[in-house]
Each structure stands twice: as structure tokens, then as C-alpha cells.
Image (cartoon, rainbow, N blue to C red; front, side, top):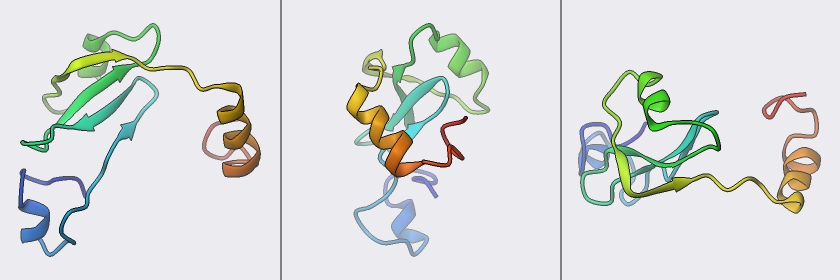
Length: 95
């Protein structure tokens, strides 16, 4: 689970202290969590994607981070690791 209803909610639900999701990566954007409120926010948009597109494909209010930018494409060495070590069968990143 994410941060549920906000700061302290994970701990109140019996989850370990000081942990939780760091990023959520989709086919449209990268989301992070506001450091104080723990609300999910758009950290960066993938090339060619608008904030409106992301918001229209989300079933809850999703603000943008103050310094929202564009997602950097993966470097050749990162793609190699993804394709050859993490997902050689292409079950996650596609065929």
C-alpha cells in the first residue's frame, strides 16, 4: 500500500515505520510522493505526454510536483540491463 490517508497512516495500519513507495512509473509519467503530505504527484511526464492526459487517466486528483519535468529516456547501458538482466523474457517491458 501507499501512504493511505497521509502521514502516519501506514504506521497506524501496522506497517513498518519509515518506509513506503518511492516512485510509481507508468506508460505516461513518473509519480513521486510529496514529502510532507505524502500525496502522489506527477514528477515527470514521458516525452509527448501532457499533464492533462495523465490526469484524465487517473481516478483521483493528481497534482504536479513544483519542479515537474520531462522523463529522461533510458541510456543504452540502462536498456541493456533492463532487457538482458531484469527482464530477459520481456514479460514486463514488452516484446
